[in-house]
Image (cartoon, rainbow, N blue to C red; front, side):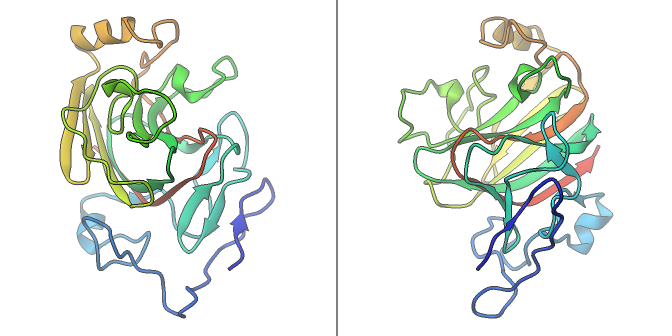
Length: 243
């Protein structure tokens, strides 16, 4: 099936059905196994959830420090990059919110979900300002990882309490809640990390990290970001609600 590649002038809608002729269904979503991709239930709508990815277009997203997304692909309700296509950020900024997103990587893969990204030319990459929910192949990545660099960590700052990622090639479900500085990381229905952006502990951890030289997490409002770290990564069912 042909890919719908996102370019600066292409908002092509990928509404094709699967090779079997039926609408693509989630077969291994840990929370919504009987739902169609990229939809909201009536309960979710009442709770204030909104789709950040409609499954057909890149509406609401753009390349970091760019305009329309370029190089990312949409197929069968999936948003993916083969690598080396640049990061994506939301058009809208968020302050207090909860985001739900599913993702998978390949062996030795590396990516991340960022929040509070400040998009200005002086910041060459998202990690200079935005905290990250780390996504990585914990077992096969071609360099030794510390616990604070493994999946679910606040990358290079604070390690998760448990490691709950599935094997490469399998779908994972991430939920991140950020509310008045109180942050929770959830992975596959398990709360794996919590921290307070206003606490002395957090500030001390940042001061000891590679982010100490940046304006990292200093502004508590910004864009959501999806990282292209140079290898394939796939996302679907991206939902957000403001708190």
